Length: 98
Image (tube, rainbow, N blue to C red; front, side, top):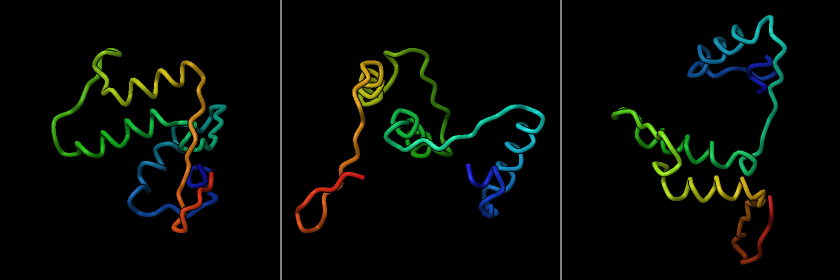
């Protein structure tokens, strides 16, 4: 979000992609907003699948039944409006919520 808005410096690895996004949004009313990982859990999960299969054949899910079981669980939780919480365990044994 900050790179597309020109607030942050773009690393060379993503310069072309960010520029394409900037060109696509020029002349349009576009709002780019940040969403925490917990609010976008299914997208985060699916992106990790794509990265794990990078360089191999493409993956295509045509319907709900084709999805991995964890993706189905996340989607059903989202439909049921069950919140996703990220809880970290500290080294001293205590817990903290991000």
